Length: 533
Image 1: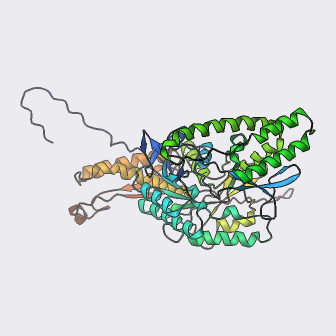
Image 2: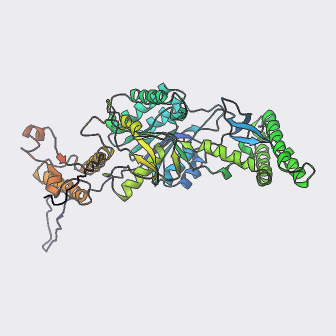
Image 3: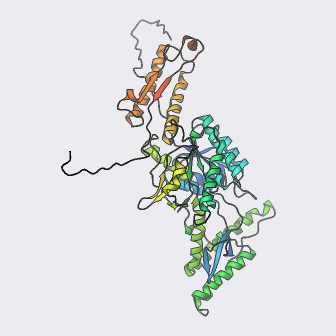
C-alpha cells in the first residue's frame, strides 16, 4: 500500500530482511479409538468427540480407568488348561462374560514407551449393558477423527477384538484409506487373530501362514505406503497382580460356592484343621459375598452405590487376609494379570514413534529399539520365519518384534505395507515426507490470494529453502551439502507457464534426497597370507 504523507517530517519504514519462518508440524500425535469407562469433561459428554490429552492422568480424569473382567473358577481340562491349584486340584480361570476391552492398558503401554500428546475418541462405554467391540462403533470413531487437524497416527488396539476377520479387514482398509486421503497421518495395524496362535501346536506353521496371508489379503491394495503393521502380540508387565482382588472373581452363587470350596480345601491342606489360623481363614472365606443386586429404579441408585462401596471395602479387607494366608490365591491373581497383559503392539509402537521423533528425528527408522514394560513377544520369531514377513512377494511387509538373548525385545523391521515401492518402502521416508508436506502446506496458506509475482515466488522459495536447510543440518536429508540434498523452484518459465499465472496457479517444485536405513549389513572378511602384498 502506498502511504500518502500530509505532514512534513521524517518517516521511518522497516522492511523485513528475512522470509517468513516455517515451523515444522508435530510428527507423532496418535489418535486412539476405542471403548472407555466414561466420557465426561466439565460435566458434558465427549463420546465420539476427539479429546487431546498429555498424560495418563488426563485420560483417567475424562475417560476413567480400564475394563476389569471377572473370572469363573473352572476345573481344568483339555480345553481350559490349568492356571492355579487349590487343594491339589488344577483350576482354570475363564472370563465370566466373554468380553474384552484393552484401550486403557494400551494407553498405559503407550506412555511406558515414550508416549506424549495424543487424541482419544471414545466410541462408547464398556459398562453399558451388552456392550461388545463392534465394527460400527469403531468405524464411527474413525470417521470422527477424520475431521480433526493434528493427529498423525491412527491406532485402534481394540480392532483385534472384533469378532471376525471380515470386520477387521473393513476397519483396516478404512484406516489406510483415510490416511491416504488426508495425507497427514499413517495407520498402525495389528494382525487380527494373533492371540489364537499356539507355537507349541503341531499345526503352528500352517496356522501362521494362513493368518499372515489373511491379513495381507485383507488390507487391500490402495494407499499401502500409509500403513504399517507389526507382529506378534506382546506379553507385557502393564497390569500388576496387586491390582486384582476377590472382586476379580465372579462371586455369583454357583461360582462363589466353588471358589469358597476350593479355598477351604487349600486351607485344610496348608494348616492343621484344629488350628486357630485354619479357623480364622475359613471365617474369612465364608464372609465372601456376592455384589449387591442392581436397583430396579433410578430412585434406588444412591443406596445401591453406597452398598457397593461398602461391599468393595469388605472384600478388600477379606482379600488382604486371605492373600497373606493362602499363597495360591495370590498365584491366581498373577495368572489373571498374565491374561490381561497380552496386548497388541500398535500402542507400544505409537510410543516408540514418539520417542524416536522427539530424541532423534522423524527421519530415523523406529527400529532396533527396545520396548519398555514388555516381557517378550507372544511368538518367538526366527530369522527364517521373518524372511517372508519382511520381504514378501506382494510387498506387504509386516514388521517383526523379536526377542534377542542379552538384548531383550526389539522392534526388528521398518517397512510400510508398500514394500515393493522404491519410493515408499520405508516407514521413515513416508513419515518424513508427511512432515515436510504438511509443514510447507500450512506455511503456504498465508500466500493464498497473495500477488502471484516474482516477489512472492522469491519469498516462498527462500522460506522453504531455509526450512529444508535446517532439516538437512539436523541430519534429516542425505547429501554432503544442501545443494545435493534438495532443490526448490518456483517461477515463471521454471515451474509455471504464463497460462498458469493467468489461471491463478503458483506451482512450487521440491526435489528431496531422503535417508534410507542400512537394513542389510554385509560383513566381508578375507585372510591375508604372511609376506603377501
